[in-house]
Image 1 (cartoon, rainbow, N blue to C red):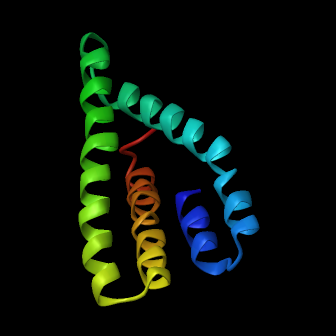
Image 2 (image 1 turned 90 degrees about the vertical axis):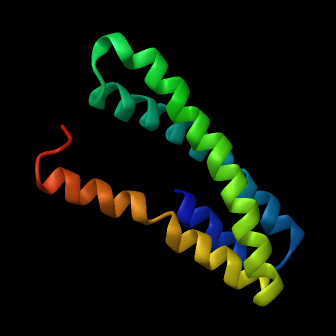
Amino acid sequence: MSALKLGLYAFVNTSFFIVLVSLLQIVTHPLLVILSKKMIEDCTPSKLIASSQIIGFAFYFGLSGFLASVISQVLNSSFSYNFTLYTFALISIFPFIIWCFMKKYDKVK
């Protein structure tokens, strides 16, 4: 969903369509939160679920927000905004690929 949203941001030209793409946040954010919560729950012992979710969300929101701003600044100064958006769209596909490999080798349910 993030790859789709970021790719659409790079593709659209007018502010009206940027607002429409932004409305995807209504779908993408709850899905990311629920699925990451479920994945953390499946990977950790029951007595550590709450702590693991707090740490996981700290990395998800805190670290990703910091790294995204630093990386986007470097890419924007060297390339175009569209290149930066396409790069982030491609980066957001990696978790899906990792999940597919984990699923193939029975590391997730």
